[in-house]
Length: 200
Ligand code: SAH
Image 1 (cartoon, rainbow, N blue to C red):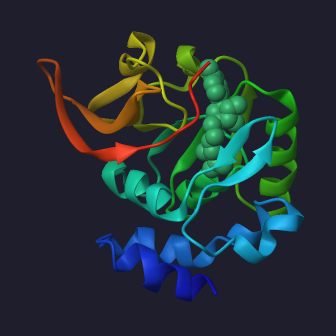
Image 2: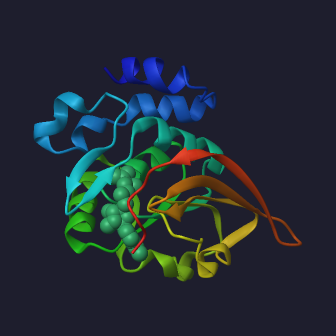
C-alpha cells in the first residue's frame, strides 16, 4: 500500500529525490493517523489528529522534504510535530531531527510513537515561532503550520546555505515558500498553493 501511495501520487506528481521516495515508502503512515482513519492512510489527503489539527497530505510532506535539500547527518528543525509523521520522514532520510509542538498532548503521543518505531527524534513542547536556539544552526527548517509571515527568530537559526520551507499566509490562502540563506541575506522561491492549520 505504501508503494501504491508513492507511485500513484508522489512520484507521479513530480517528486524525484530517491532518498525522499524511499523514506515515503518506508514510514508506516497508517500508524500516524487515528485508528478509525487507517483505511484512508494511503490516500493523498490530510487527516484529522484531534484537537483541530491535521496530519499533512503525503504529497506535501514529500515536497517539503525534497525542497529542504539536506544531507544525511544534517540537523533539521521541524515546527509543528503533530502526529510525528513528517519528523519520521526526515529521520528516515538521515537527518538529526528536532521538532517543536505547542500542544503537550500531541507532542507526548508523537514522542511515544516515534520511540516505538525507533526514530530518534527530539521533541520539545513550546512555541515553535521561537525555534529551538540551543541546537541552531540548522541545515533545514520545515514549518508545518502556517504563519502570516515567517518569524524572524526562525530565519536566524538557519545555517548559511540552508533552507527554510514554510507555508506563508492566512485564511485567504497560503503559498509554500523556500528561504535560502546566503552570505548576504535570503533568496526566496515559491512552490504553489497549500493549506495548513495556522501557526498559533
Ligand atoms: N507535521 C505534522 C502536522 C502538523 S499540523 C505531522 O506530520 O503530523 C500543525 C501542528 O502545528 C499542530 O500539531 C499544531 O498544534 C502545531 N502548532 C501550531 N502552532 C504552533 C506553534 N506556535 N508552535 C509549535 N507548534 C505549533
